[in-house]
Image (tube, rainbow, N blue to C red; front, side, top):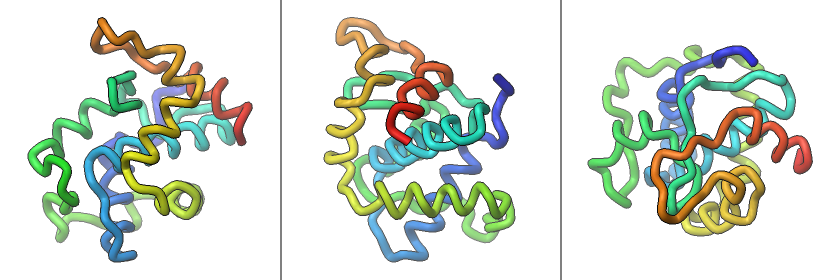
Length: 151
């Protein structure tokens, strides 16, 4: 498997900007789950990861730690782009943008807590999560296997 088409922060910023354009709420928890679903759908379709950043099985579901840390100061509030003037829609190619819009259309309608519950019912998180351990990776291969069954 290749390293990833983008950094997770690029994808996260695209999703944050999209949420703002739709006037929709987007907390860090919801962003984390949307990143998980975007990664899963991309892997199922392209056999390579959308982003290379590590995803881990946390108690509230899949999390990309690099992105979580970037926006953790927002707590459970909506996230704002750190520097809106530096964001460009073109930072993501059209095919990937279409996939992200599909992910938003499918999963963006749900509240963060509902997405958390959905991810808890899915194989990639269930197989990786250990309540007494931290920093367990949900590998791209595990995500791909799980999403090939869904998509």
